[in-house]
Image (cartoon, rainbow, N blue to C red):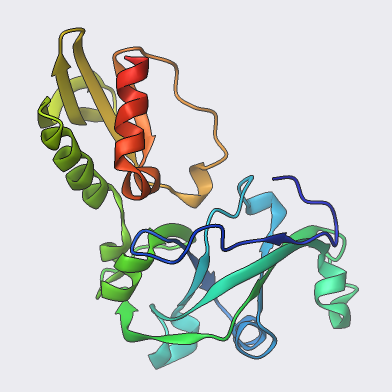
Length: 238
């Protein structure tokens, strides 16, 4: 989807379910939190954004600057629509800001809802943006519970087994920084190995890895939403 300035795009393309995608975004000052809470919008610099805002909910990670209320995800809201605007139009009282003419995504959101319990950052990993699912957001106790790769591996493994196909987890391969594939399928046309990638915000706009007919990369969020479709595509292209 290509956005033009002041032309909104709308979210909510799927009914909310366990696999509904959620963007977890960082809030590091009281002013931006107040805008999300009272004015119902959040901003993302275009230079740091992927091609698509591939989420239907926004969750807010409050940094340590919020004191006792920080280092956790405490609130979330549905993403209603988003616009491409200049910073000076978002925050007119700061029209002389050095980035006043830079473009931002303005995410319009519904009222903030409080999670059943805050999702703490107990191990203090540095967070920027990450994707998760609504199910994991509502169940998580620690930010590490929001990662999707393990859940995607289990779901796709179960679907492959239901089809009566031979499959193994953690199959050894020579992939440089990843010595094991998440899954390996075995069939009449040989072996197909598979790496499931975490849908990291900063990696969504990167070029795909070099093509290898025997090894595939799939997105964890895609697997969780449509494991049957992912498996069909893998078998059709193998």
